[in-house]
Amino acid sequence: MKTQSEVWSIVNALKELYPDSLCSLHYEKDYELLFAVRLSAQCTDARVNMVTPALFARFPTLEAFAEADPKEVGEYIHSCGFYNGKSRDLVGCAQMLLRDFGGKVPREMDDLLKLPGVGRKTANLVRGDIYAEPGCVVADTHCIRITGRMGLTDGTKDPGKVETQLRAVLPPEESNNFCHRMVLHGRAVCTARKAHCDKCPVAPWCDYAQKQE
View 1: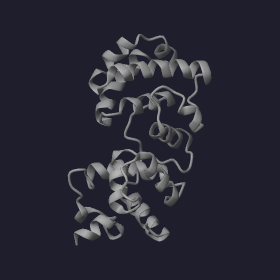
View 2: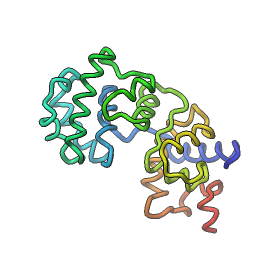
View 3: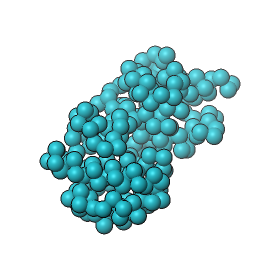
View 4: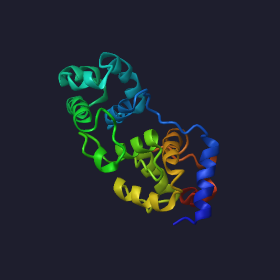
């Protein structure tokens, strides 16, 4: 595993490369982020961002979503895939937020996990982006792939194990933005198809890059 100094070197190199570590999903209201993350399952963020403007215009409030027919919601999100299950989750989530949480997106992990379609990845993203909770790790495909290559994790593909391992090594105050930078880095440099180590500022501390020399 990496030393604390090596971890900070990786964190700072990525921070310099991607100073604006913003979420790729577009949203204005807290629950819109929650819904957008649900739509992003097995779908690209770019596709979700194409779909949500019309969706949120048609259902402009949480109450509108709670009263919506899932079939109509499904028509707006059809291109995101798995639209039947996702539409039911959005409507059910809106109903639960209004009924059990006063119309607010809850802050605590246990409460978030009660919501339809919400797993730890979604809950961590919400807690990190909306509430700025330290120590939030969003173990998506980019994060799992790249941190395994770097040697920040043991290479496991299990999201829960990746989350646990990263929480143990990442500075808590940096973890949420680090995961956003993983998405940016995974698209631009350390792609699934090929790791462009010659263009990567993290290469000096990356196990995978060092093996390529």
